[in-house]
Length: 355
Image (cartoon, one colour):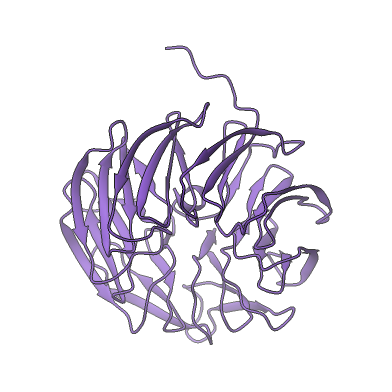
């Protein structure tokens, strides 16, 4: 799923490949701006033509496709052998992961740009999906049936994915410039936190604190249960450029890409800058922390790997077309799409388990 788990931390214990050895490429034929999801030996990703592709993890060979009616920028969620995919056509599709057969379709009022998240149904069995839409609503949908549970309205587009605290509260940023905190059971708004500018990315959560960048050139740390009016713990501003990238978190660091052509590392406790890595283009791709390394795409057409400790470059791979998609890391491979229409896999996949 988007950022690897319900708290959207963008981290994995898998080490980054020592070198950018290309394992395989898959040609979708249209630009890929969405992140991929990897489950059960399959890779799932959408493209600008609205096609969801299922690809073999080990070979890069296509297994099935499903056509939606508009471009896809949302990362799919795969849960219990079902692929949940939002599309620019305003629908969320539930597809059988093995065959691509449609199980159900849920219609929002406008395009869905962020990946779905999920939570256990607090009132019974099964899971609920949480989905933001440009219709300004956050939608809660039963994962098994596609039936709406509740919706919560805001004053502008919702572009990113909602995150879920371990306490069960839902948090997301909106283009209305607010951070919204909702109760899972019924969608009731518990708190709004003013962020000063609209938010296009997803909030990352660790413990009781959320982290998000905005178009007001700030990265913000906040505690939604802090004293009223004092929920903001710190604000980081380096240069006056917006943040579209979502943050990745470690126990002591926040790592986020900026439109100032930099990857920023921030002390998680204090909000002070630790280091910057200079790329050659805007970094809208959301970084993934892989052990003691970080992998991130860039609009300069490169995929970068840098040290987590000091931001020094380990390697770069020149794709030659913008990489705005966020990388996925799984079983020895880094998988990322690019605007040249190809999906790339770097590294050496672990040996598939014997049946």
